[in-house]
Image (cartoon, rainbow, N blue to C red; front, side, top):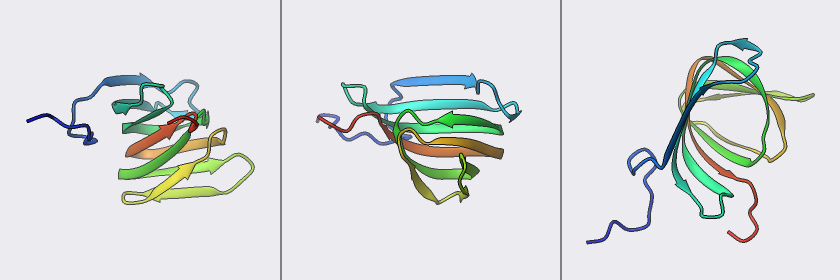
Length: 121
């Protein structure tokens, strides 16, 4: 029996794992892990799990990103805009190019799907 093509986020084999402190944090000492479970051959679309310890940092989203908060909470502050609070069970989309500040007060874990370019996928 073949393994099939469907990827189970959190259960299938991890194709890459990155672990690093956030660059130029605004507060705290945030450290993030990123486990990628699926990446399209074009490199334009991927999905996985991300987690991070307490802190805040600015980020200009290079890709469109769907997020589902699995554990903890995050605040996402749009530059010159509102502050959004997301808790476990919440989901949201950050459009490509959106400048935001991410704030993790204790710990957060999310499932993500990101797309750099949707054409040709």
